[in-house]
Each structure stands twice: as C-alpha cells, then as structure tokens.
Length: 431
Image (cartoon, rainbow, N blue to C red; front, side, top):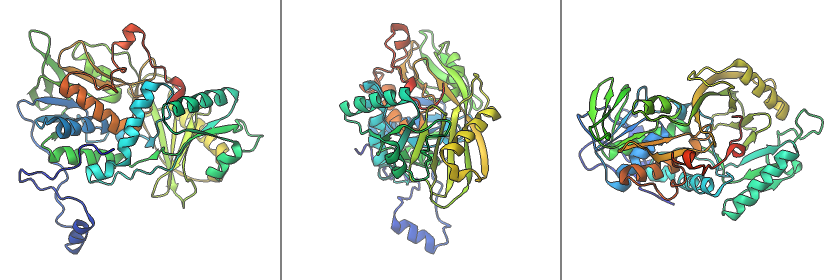
C-alpha cells in the first residue's frame, strides 16, 4: 500500500530528493550543501487547521491532510522540540496482533503503511520486519494468546503459535529451562512485526509535510483554546501569541487531558510514566523482538547494537517522565532470567515518557462536543506502532469533519454508550 508519495516542492524552497546520486554529489562537496530538512517559520495570524503536538502522530496527521486532502495552510504547534515527547522515548515495536476486529483493522492499516513508508516519505525510517514474539508463561497466557491467534487469522492478520523449542530456535538466546521463575510454555509470533527508527519517523514526516507547505512551529506552547459565540473553536492562545483557526486537532499524548480541559472537555484518560532502557552496544545477538506480559518486560536490539528494553507502566498516575527505580529493577530481573547471556551487560541510559490510558486500553480518534475540535489520544503503551495508520485516518477525520471508516469505532462517545473495545490483554504490559 502506497499513500501520498513525497513531492518535491514547486514553490522555490530548497528540498533535496534523497537518492544515491544526491548522496554521491554531496559527498564530493564534503556534505556542506545539504539544506535544512524543514523550516522554522514564524506563526501566521491564522490557519485553515492547527495540530497540537509535533510527535509522530501529529506530524503524520498534518502530512496526510496536505498530501491527500489538499489542506496546505496547516500549522503543527509543539511546546518543546519536534519528536521530543513519546515519539523519541519509546521502544519502537511494531505489530498488529490485537484481539478485536476494530483494533485489527486499525493496527494492520498502519502495518501496511509501514512497509512502504521509507519510499513514500523519501526518508529511511529503518523499518525492519524481524518478527515480534510474545511469551506465554502459564495456562492463562496460552489460552489468551491462542485466542488472539485464531481471531487474527480470521481477520487475515498473520499470527502463529510456537512451542518452547520453536521459540528458542527463532530467538537462540532465550532461556526455556523449566526451573526458572516464569518458565516459557510457548509463544505467539507475528512475523511481519518488527521495529523502526523512531526519530527517523518524526523527521521523515516533518520533512514531507514541510515540503507541502505545512508550518512546523516548535517552542510554541498552547495555553488556551478560543471559542466563538456559538461555542465552536476559533483559535488558540500560545506562548507566541494568538493564532486563529476553525479546525483544531489535539494529538498531545500524555498531556491530552490538560489541553482538552482548555476547551472544557473532560477526557476518560489516566496518564502514567512508562520507562525504557538501553544497554551498551553489543555484537548482534537478538534477531527479533521478544515481549512478556507476565513479567512486564520486552527487548530488541537496535541496528547499532544496543539492547532496547521496555518496562511496564508505573503504578501511579503522574505527569513525571522519571518513573520509579523499582519498576526498572523488576524489568531487568526478568530480562536477566529470560536472557541469561546479557546478565553482565551494562545499562547506558534509562528514561521515561507519559502515556495516556483509556478505560478499555484502546485509542480515541474522534470529533468532540466542541465544533471544530478533534482529538487523537489514548494509545497507552502502543502508540508508536500505529503512527502512519493513526495519522492517515485522523487526517481524514479532521479534514472532512467525519470519521474515517477504520476510525469510526474509536469515538469518544463509546464511553457513554458502552460500546468499548477492550484490548487490555493485547497491550503486552501492565496497566
């Protein structure tokens, strides 16, 4: 699936199309002639639409609004720096093996976009379909994962069951001894799953959106949402002045509740810290992604060799990006048991992000009771994998005022009607 291929701007702005030839030309010139990949414009007085949040989802939304819906007078406002929130803080896992049909369609839509995203954006996002394996440690895990496998197959999504021996063959450093604390009794494997470079995803969407005329305005915090006499959105107050608009999309991840409160909309969200770690670089030892629900740990290896390790959410609501040390320690205990070969590996960095969690652990892609106000949030611990699909369907919702068919079940209204999409078991970490 190829959606909205990258276009070189025709308005005189300098945008190089990356290729082996442009790389060779610039190498001969000492790499001195590469232009900036996106502009740093001053905000205009008004825009046709504004997106709050310059993470992967927000930038993807702006790109698809410009590329597919012809809306080029768009601003993306970011209170910090581009990709500095959860997009730059996650563990980059991509998969679509969710339980319910609604979720499967959404995440598999994203999976299909991932496959050609580098070509579409003319930017190497380093997508690697190396496989995602989810470990079963008890009878309950086995039953849950097999249910997921059958549901996925009925929906046309790849997923398969592995015995402990097959799991070790797929990931040789895995410990399948029967005398460990949580012995491995099998695993569910999605071979199309994998990883991508999170920074490159944000940069690729930013560059492609900028080429279509989208203004990306960093260090521009939204401090208020303006409404006209009818109650509809009329603009935003920011740290860089008032900006007018009639369409406002909020894509602010863990800070969504704070932003939406500016418009008087209460969100069914709780925000938690979520931690991750990376090790010193090692030679290749980890050929896939391995996840464990029961011990709340997951691990892959980046292209530069460091082990990327993720934990479960902290057990308290907070807007802190620090997280509790005991959570990271618990995760490393589990990693050392599952992968004894890494026990003497040094950890280089530990960090956290703020994840926004809904009661049913599924996202919200929706219009709101405020005319002109739209929201994309509630991705919990699984937002990165959905980036292209989320941006694509939310762009349709904001541009047309009506939900994309794939996004239609993920309305804010479902928490009133009770038509929930319970994906707690598919989230793969504690909530």
